[in-house]
Length: 149
Picture 1 (cartoon, rainbow, N blue to C red):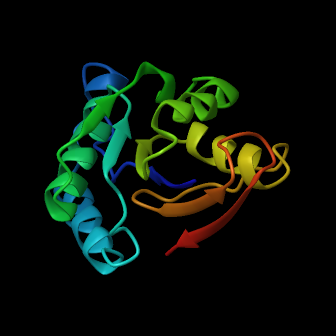
Picture 2: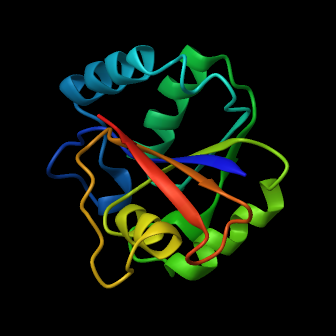
Picture 3: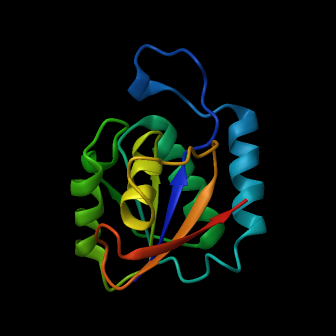
């Protein structure tokens, strides 16, 4: 299975709640440029899984528009404080596909580390950063990753 992890684009600092933080104009532009730059490596993406937070919904929509992906799946399992093991296991539902997951720190780094490295030492993601994961199955310790920077 191949899948991609992505941290949402840069978001405004303050909003009525963390869930309602919008992408900044700079965040929108960076996500758009980053996805266009890596479009050839993302050509297999056929669905986008994202958290219900506004900034991930907005990021997912930008990615979907650029990659012509019509299947967007909103999931509460990919919020900032979600359990990384459960989030990773949820990808079994799209195991025959090539999903791109738009999520947050720290879960994005924790899932990458759980899948590919030592989960005690996750490496942070910058806003808009992508990681490609290749694994026989979406489970702890089975993957290899490549950061797309």
